[in-house]
Image 1 (spheres, rainbow, N blue to C red):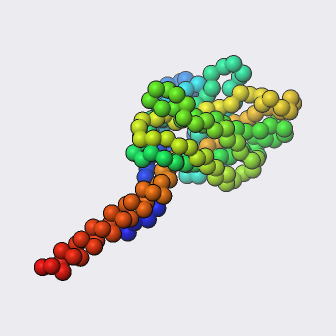
Image 2: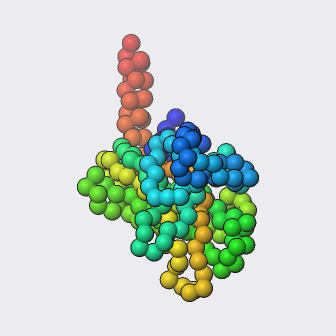
Image 3: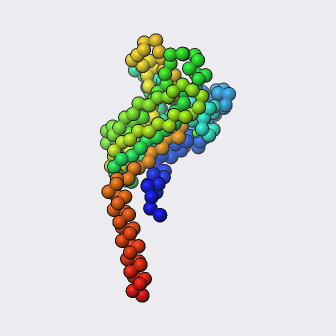
Length: 217
Ligand SMILES: [Ca+2]
């Protein structure tokens, strides 16, 4: 049966839930991996994702599933904390990047005026920016912020990067940023109406031909 869901269910991003990880004990970066958020000396290998900057933590608390990624703000002028991965688009037109965000109350307590945000960037094979999207989270204890961003792109290879924002936003001056927690990253292709109609017509034509062929036997 032809439906829009056939297009929307394509798995374009690998391990968007951050559930598929390997922890290598090497005495280096602290990684938060337990529900008590205690640090261990290990480096996570997150399947499908490249990690840049430090520290970057995998949270075991208040997540959807066992893990989410946390993007702590970076010092102005410094290297952003980020995860990135390459993906392919097999359809041109409109696409949607969706993710869940969380700004836990426990973190906000340390800085009442704090905000939490991140930057999503998609670049093409020539490293040109296709789209860039600043996302945020409302302070709370549930991973309830289901955010989405539409962009237009053709068939080809791309890279999605999720990065931290600088420690202090432009205003208010007294506020600082804290880590934003991200989970369930996905990209779905929204089919062009014309493509759906063409495909539907094609299916109809085939069905009619088959029926005609049968009736001629
Ligand atoms: Ca998860």
